[in-house]
Length: 437
Image (cartoon, rainbow, N blue to C red; front, side):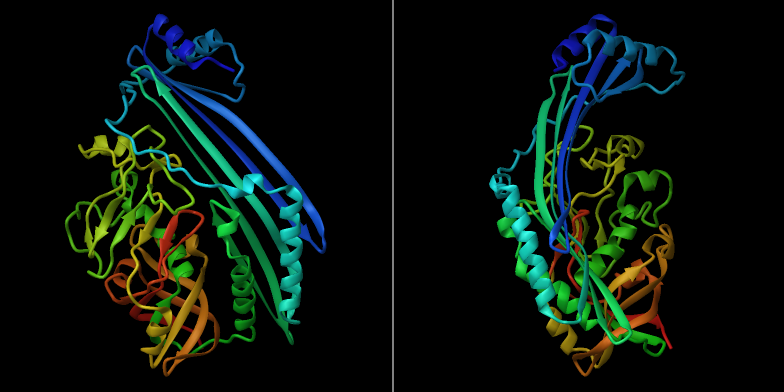
C-alpha cells in the first residue's frame, strides 16, 4: 500500500507548500433473479486516490487506481503537472474544520447473511409476486443489491478524517395486464439493514399500484386541486433542487439570487438539508473538500435562509462553506421538505373533484431550471367527493414550481427520502392546470 505520510514528506522536500490526499473505495453486489434462476451475480470493488498539491502557488492534481505505486513517482508526476499549468489563480488546501461530527454506528446485518439466503429471499419474492394476482404477467426485474463506500482524507496541515456508508436494497419491476391494457410498476427500497426492509409491503405496494393503474384514461382539461404523492413530489423537487446551489448562484442560473431572507414559498414549507440524518441511507460527517457537515434549514416557514455552498461558491459570495461539496459541485445531501400533519386519506377526503398525481415523465426536458416553468406528462387518480374513483393517464400538468410552492393547501405526514437523497411528503395544492381531453 502507498504510504501517504511519506508522500507528504517527499512533497514538502520537493518544494510543495501543501498536499492533500483523498482515498476512496467502493464495493458493490447485485444479484438479479429471473424466472426461477439467478440471472446475474456480480461483485465489484475499486479503490483509487487523488493527490492535490500546491507548488509555487499553483494547484495541481494526480489520480491513481494503483495503491501500490511508488511514492517518489507520485511526487515527480505532480511536479511535472504543476510546471505545465498556466494560471494566475492561486491554489489553496483547506486545513480542516474545528470540529467534526462523529461517524454513526449502525448494524449492517446483511454482511452476515449468506449468499444462499439472499437468493432464497429473491426466489420467495418472485413466488409471492406471481401468486398475488393473475393479472401480473411478467416480472422483468427483481434484484437484491449492496452498496458500500468509504473515504479517507489527510493533508499536510494535520487533517486526518474518515467516513463510510453501507446499505442494501431490493428492486422490483412488474407488468400487469387486463384485456389489451398493460401497466408496469417499479419499486425500490434501500436501508442500512435488510431486516428493516418490509419485503411484504414492498411487494404489496408494487402489485396494488400496477393493478390500480390498469385501464386508466384521461380527464377533461381544467384547473384542479391537486395532491402530489410523496415519491412524485420528491422527483419533481429533485429536478429543481439546483436552485439552492451556490454554484448555480455564481452562474446566475437560479431565480433565488439575492433573495436570502425573503419569503419565496408558503409559510407551510420548510426545507432541510440533513447530511447528518441518522436514519438516512447516506450519512456525511464531512464533504468532498473536508468541510464538516451539519443539518440546516434552507427554507424555513417559506423564507429562503441560505444557498448550499462549497469552498468555491463560499469564497465568491464572501461567506463560509456550508459543507455541501458533493458530486463535483455544491448540492444538498438528504435535502427534504419537512413533514406536515395530514394523512393522505384526510387530504383526499377534503377534495370534491381533483387529482392525485403519482409520477411525472420527462422531468429533465419538461422543466426550465431557471424560470422553473414546467409542462410534464403525468398520471395518477381522479378524486370525486373525497374518494379515489379511477386511474388517470394521458394528461399534462403545467405550471411554475415556485408558484406551486406558494399555493400549498396542506402538507402530508408521509415523508420519504429517495435513494438519490431528495425527499418530500405528499403535498396538496390549491390548483394546477391540467391538459387532458
